[in-house]
Length: 123
Image (cartoon, rainbow, N blue to C red; front, side, top):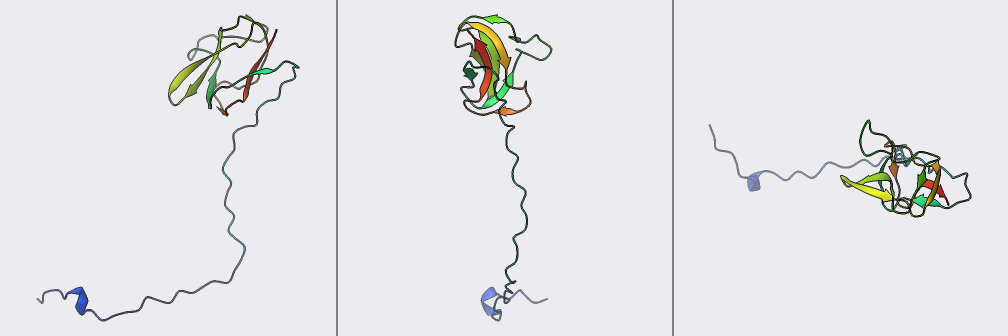
């Protein structure tokens, strides 16, 4: 059996010629899915907006009652929901006292965007 030859002793072989295909239409690339559009408020009152991107939860845990429901009276500083961001559960507090007029975010289903409306509190 002969020892292998060093690479420097192999004959030079030029790289294979590349064939250029004529220009044609680009293959269709699927566009990434966008988050669901924010639900618009029917109220004339400004909504409480999400202070961070994350996932909206109406209750403190699975199977537990929601923090608030439409028609509930809330006080400024009262926890109204949770937004999970980077594995941390962030309590979101009411920015004013009043009555919950609308809940605009869906519980746990879609990621929220920064400053997306969460709910409406009528003074």
